[in-house]
Length: 127
Image: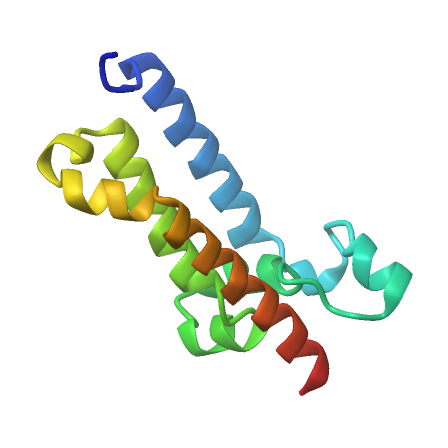
């Protein structure tokens, strides 16, 4: 089976959408109630692993990295991992770094990430 690759048209559409979405998050501060609140938080009073992500993205786009970490500690590492996986899967990284791709797409790694998210979810509601 040939490796998955995005066509130039699809890549362009994805980049345009990311730029538009980035512009929205850059322009509008989520603290000003422009975006919908977290349903899980509203129903339970507890924070989910994604709570604070919109504010963290807004802070990152304004280069306030420390503030982004305060809003959601996992966002920056997860973003780096997502960009790495996109590169490996769609932009030829799988051929250049096959061992890394196998490791990051393996069951152990996926369950490790899931465990970290669950531990973060519990810890952020305790402390």
